[in-house]
Image (cartoon, rainbow, N blue to C red; front, side, top):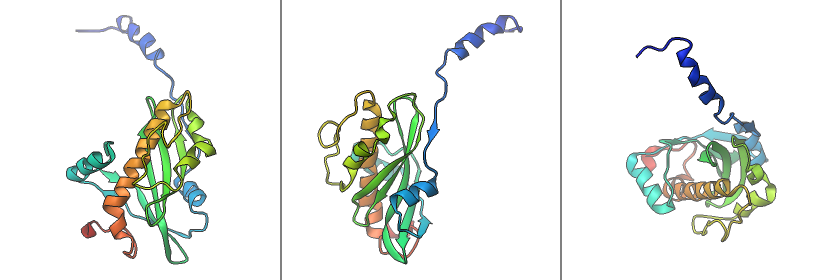
Length: 193
């Protein structure tokens, strides 16, 4: 089938009806690292690779699918002492990804969360400090259920739910893959799993 210039113009109005891209970047990786671990002086990049079996195990334990084949993780130190893990993750808001950073203690408790990039047109109230503060102190044993131990924000329900599920998934990742590797001096070693 041949389309000449005039006959193919009908495609352009459809493209014009699509939702415009909206993204606000709040933190770079290094800015989020300093915000979540202000006294740290060393961030050792330690990406964690996942096999299909690993991803299945995470889904079974967290109830949420692990999409990435490799999780961006940094081992955090201050003056040579291990302070925890800095993890960057993405979850879907309503249509677009929300990139966030999670700080975990060596024991796997949430120290803090920062929204690094928000791409939705609304619902960015998840950036509010009082909403993010609800996660502090939570560990893999926490319920982490929206409207139970994590409060919802009207107009941002999907963002709230998906960030909550993302934190739960990362806590399972810590329990299953990082907890036994905390004493290792440096980057994550897949051989120690």
